[in-house]
Image (tube, rainbow, N blue to C red; front, side, top):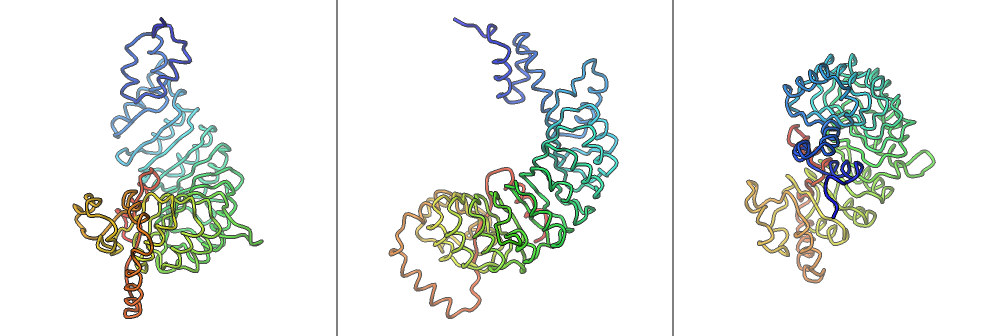
Amino acid sequence: MAKLIDLPREIITLICCSLKQSTKHTCIFLNKEFHDAAILELWREPILQTTESLKKFIKCLELSKYPRGECVRVMKLGYKVHLMDDELILLLHFMPSLEVLELRKADTLTDKSLMQVSHYCSQLKSFGVTGALMTYRSAHYLGHCKQLRRLTFACCQYLTPFALLPFEQLKIEYLDISGCKWLNVKETAYDLGCLKHLTHLNLVCCNTVSKEFIQHITTTANETPCLANLQDFSITGGTLLDDGAIIPFVKTHAQLRGLFLLECAITDQTLDAIGAHLPLLHNLDLSFCHRLTPNGVRQLVRQCKNLRLLGLKSCGITQHDFPEIPSSVFPSVIHENNYPHINTLGYEELTCIREKSHDTFNYMDEDVGIAEEEEENTIVMDDDDSVSESYAYIQHYLNSQTI
């Protein structure tokens, strides 16, 4: 019978790759083979949760007899970690094989360090900063990272409308420029339309996005679909983005699986278009959209068979608008502070709506029709948050910024 010590090094390495960070640390003490494999894995993606732990990590790199920094592939620093330009430059110098660099609190970083990223980390595949004081100069040099696939410039206010130009020839698949106010139609929308490989696009809290901007990323000058590979799209619209802007976009992007239309001036007409043209849709958020009706939401749910999460945050829709959903299915909603208003319809609630036949609620449809005639400005809504990482990031914007 084979023993643990007899496993080939390749198998041991694969085992360590699949373990949590704390378990990898335990493996160091098993035997020499696991020690060697676990050490490399621990260095591959160091977990640094505080500024103090970051400073100790940098000191360790400086004093180490071995080039351990060459093992680092992923560096993700959260909101609690403060990083200065000189510290980032030092890190980059020690980590030439870095593939992922994500800095959630970059409000002290400038071109001094960020323009050197491509010089030290030519293998970079994912780059993300939030609140960085970078200018177009840093974006220009980042365009030299030919393997770059994921890009985040969240709340980077010193960039220009040309910020996406250096990445036109790269195969960018994920782009987040949420919270940026420098977007325009002539440069930004045009360059955005050139990112043919884009599958994820986040434009949350970009108050410069207009109807014309959306039209530029809907179809090309030849009337062919633009961003045809898009699977996840998030935007904050305001009063400028109505049915006329969103419906054509929906019709030309049938591959969408995640759609977040926050604070848009859309009506049930957009919901009809979503139900008819987005068969793969899994997650939909219509938070702060005040022109939707419960009946429009109901019809949407029945049409979108694959829908798993539907957000309705601050939309005024209540549990009483959906009597087909048993109260026992609503425990999490009932105990929320805004009861009876609904924030989210999950899989169970959506299933209850779908299982009821149209005939069962014909009387409700008639009542809604009469109410719409009597009140010209009926206000209701639709949509909320999701479970994936990108969706949680969007909700962070909703909670931290005034919409």
